[in-house]
Image 1 (cartoon, rainbow, N blue to C red):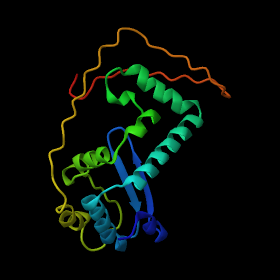
Image 2: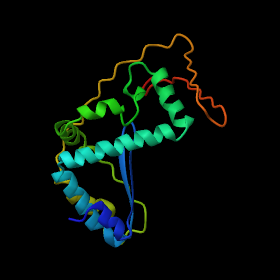
Image 3: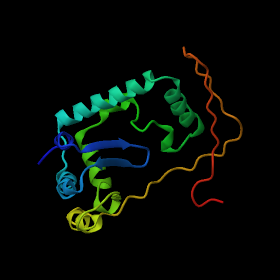
Length: 193
């Protein structure tokens, strides 16, 4: 099967990223490529496995991203510091990629378990925009996604934050061209009035 880099050679634009609650993979392509690309995505999800070489490569990529975030200036450092200072219990207090000190302990079994738990048909959202020729995206995707396991999505147990009883502040000395200030306010969570 073609790799995603092979698709890029065919003119498909690929953009992916991971945020705190989701991963997206976006493709810009011509309609005649949709079925073959969907087939490859499903095959990857169905047969996904990693190995030490891939894991090592990804660890290096994450370390490089972390280094670039730190070197990119004060804005990213301020955002990370704000999350860590404002949240005491919630996992959002940590950077999306975690901390560099955690990477050496990451093993293939950890990745495989996470993948099998979250990258399942019952947890996929598919959006298509464009000039679709022939079958709709839904008709193209439905039989392909039906081969994937459908599992109950695990309920995340997140401890409630303690109420903030006063201001929290942090000064981060840095050599920058101009000073910056970032202010955050906690808001109610979903379901609260």
